[in-house]
Length: 75
Image (cartoon, rainbow, N blue to C red; front, side, top):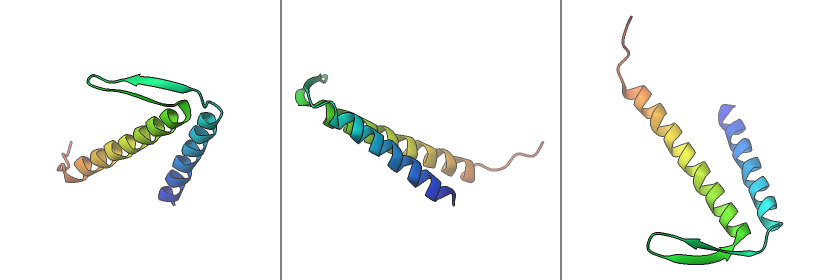
């Protein structure tokens, strides 16, 4: 049940990001350390929201894995 709620929450966040981004079609320039790219604000918002969600899920899974492997210490 918890996985379904998580997936629904992620889908809602992505839909909100896409709606926000579709209302902002002006181009922006992103300057990286070694490169520069131009993209629409909608693409940038969607891209960075997706990257943030994926990184958050990976960190949560890593934390859960570490907690499962770490031996339980008794008090």
